[in-house]
Length: 252
Image (cartoon, rainbow, N blue to C red; front, side, top):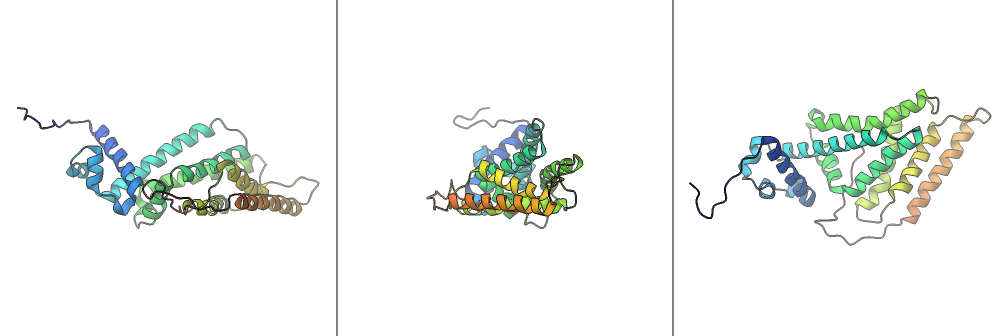
């Protein structure tokens, strides 16, 4: 019997219900941050009763982990698709750095949730996000290995150091932006960072001492980064806390 004025419950397939809850959760986490996000808010956004969330997720943190996991999987799929059509060590490295910069620029709140909430948790190494993050950064190391195997790059520098240098530059360059000061151009910054990294990795021409070549390339790349810093001197932006709050991500 239908009770007048009462909305009829619609039983959706499990996958569709989970997807709707996760979409709602992502929106609420981005708008309010982890601490201020309530499961009741997420339930209302997903048009379910709060108890339904516990049918699919253990708690709020488990729901956040799944949201970040879904985000990473989408990024990795896009990376693989785009990289398949890019040739050349420099072009492939540049794409990785550029895309990472674009992610920080477009999704500062999700970066915060990943690096300040998920990665700082004691259970991080046991989550699927941890493995996805390894795959994410290993895309960069694989490109460097390909360059070494092709004889383009030196093979005597630890790959983890190369990774830390690249993503450390990204972190430093985006610091002011994520505090709400200044801005950055992903294209220009990606070029400068890749030039800096490859300046230290590229093999020297046979007729020129390696140390001299490396020093020259590094000086040019550092000068370029410094010029970009000067050109985007931090002018504090007015921002709405709910829409434009900027967060500092940790290193990938």
